[in-house]
Image (cartoon, rainbow, N blue to C red; front, top):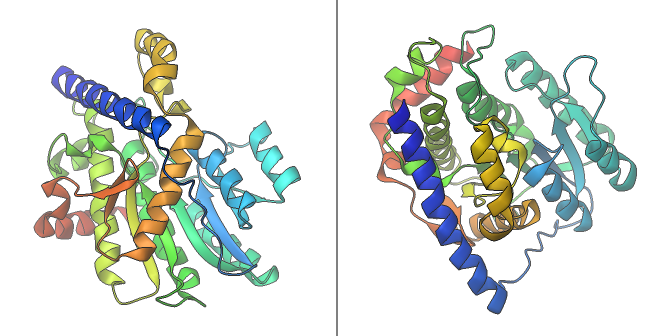
Amino acid sequence: KMAATMRLYANGALNSASQWLCDRVDQVQPPPMPQLQPSRTGKAAVVTGACGGIGFELCLLLAANGWEIIAACHHKTGRQPCNRSDLLETEHHANILALDLMDLSSVAGFAQTVADICTSQQLSLGLLVNNAAVMLAPLQCNHRDVESHWQINVVGPFALTTHLLPLLSQDHSPKCKAAVVNVASCVHTIEPLDLSYIRDSRSPSVYDPAKSYPQSKLAIIMLTRHFQQRKAAGSIAFVAVHPGIVQTTLYRHTPWLLQRLQATMAPCLLRSPKRGAQVVLASVMAAQASEDVLYYSDFQAISPSPSALDNDKLADLLSLIKAQSD
C-alpha cells in the first residue's frame, strides 16, 4: 500500500511541475478563453459536483454563456445547501438538485427530475459533465457492497450517462452535438486496470485508497471510449479530461502534513478551479470538432495510457459494472 501511495504522489508532483511550465507559457501567450455558446436559447447543462471547486466555476462560466444550469450537489439528510449552491440558484437561476452517486436509485431519480425540468421549461439537454469524485477516502461501501471510489467515480457516472442519453440525443445533429465530459486524471497512467482488486476492494485488508483513485480514473476513460464507439455516428460527443492539479476539496482526505504543504505550494503549483473549468470547456469544443478526441489535458488532445485502449479489459469492465448495477 505504501508503494501505491508513493506512485500516486510522485505522479502528481511530476504533473504539477509540467502544469506549472504550461501555465507560465500561457501567461506570456494565453490561449483563447473558451466560449462554449449554446446554438440557441433553451440549452441546458447538467454538472455534478457543482457545490464547489471546478463544478461550481464551470456552472458560472456556462451561465455567463447563456446556458440553463442543472447543478447536482450531494446534500445529506438534514444538511442545508451550501452557500455556493444558493448563489447559483439566486443569481443564476440554476436548478439545484440533490444527487447521491453512492445510491443508484438516487441517480435514476435525478435523471427523471432532469427530464421533467427539460420538459416543463422547454429545454434541450446539451451538456453533461460528470465532475463529482472522491479521492483517498476512508473505506466506505454502499448497500450493494461497492466501494466509494468505484461507485462515485465510475458506476454512478456510467449510470447517469446511460439514463440521460435519450435526452442528450434529442434535437441535436452532427453539426450541433451534445456533449458528455468525464473528468479524469493524469494518475490514470500509474498502472493497468486491476479488476480483481476492484472486486475485492470492499475488504479492509485489501483496500488501498491510493490505488482505488487511479484505477477509477482509468476506468472512466475506458468508459468514455465505450460511449464514443457506441454513439460514433450519433449526435453526442464524448471526452475525458484531466483539468490539471487543481486546488479543490478533493484533497480533503490527504494526510494533514501534505495538506499543509499543498496549501503553501498552491499559489505556485496548483491551478485555480476557474482555470480547471476552462480546460473542461475547451475539451468539449475539441470533442465536438473532432470524433478522434478521447482524452484532453493542458488545452490539447493527447493519447491516454495504452491501458485505456485495451478492448478485452473494457469488455470485462462493462461486465463488472453491469453486475454491480443489477
